[in-house]
Length: 360
Image 1 (cartoon, rainbow, N blue to C red):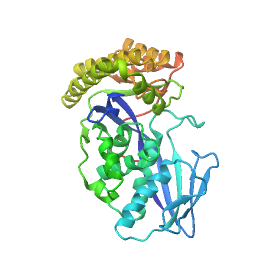
Image 2: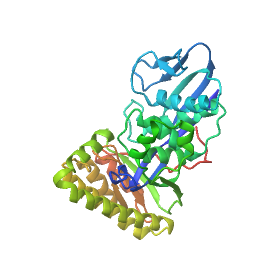
Image 3: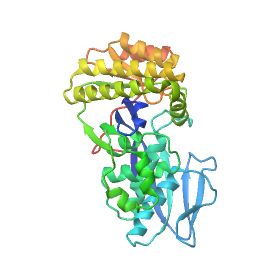
Image 4: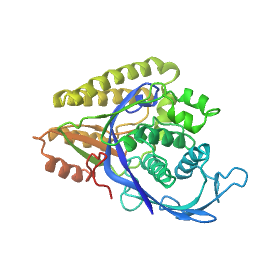
């Protein structure tokens, strides 16, 4: 049996701006995982996952080209990831085989409610890694990111790919989103192998040093749809609000540049200033677009964290899900978590995860 895990993620800063090509975000991978296990099979394969209503799904191969075909036609990250990796195998002239694939997840609350930790990206990355290992394909982190992004694009084209980068590279990650229009143009007439080997315009992914800060995470219990929120902001910031959106993008780029420099210098005071600046920029974007990013619960999470001496903001698209607090040595973490709980916010037992540390 082959087993591969991929971690969930949290945004530290750069949300919304990073969906535009060439704009930056900072993310972290966290120590909760999606694990994909593969065992060889014959004549047909089966995908098992609690993410499916039916719990399992049979798959076959199309007689004309051997491509994976499922018993029901639907958009699915796992199936898309299998197809992308197997295209690499076919391009290299390798034989395709059947297998059973099982998905298990720690990125929910135990009852199936997602925690906003990037489960779609983590399952795509874990599937890419597992299928590649099944076929003995050596892939570095950048190749894993590129295959996972291409697979996820086929299912949900709205998004930056930052969560995929964090899940593939792990640790603290500086990410600049690629030119998606360029990617779409080339995808139609370029092999998967060629695309993976090419330099993608604007794309930059690099690990950052971990600052001497304790990351704490609070979950509001209100799941949010990132694609819906991103689409809503983009729809409302066109036309008469173009100038405001352009100002937001400029402000975010300046903020992220300063934040990355502060992280590299482990300058806690400057990190705090830029976290607050990113929160202000998102608040302005929320007013311009009419889309609620920092909900009352997230605002309360931030207020409590700041009262206890931490730097805090919403994480990701907002509208619910999680908020983050970066805690200094003098932060009263116990009081902060207790106050979160009193306010109906669940502290999550999470740490930043980097390659080389033990996985489940």
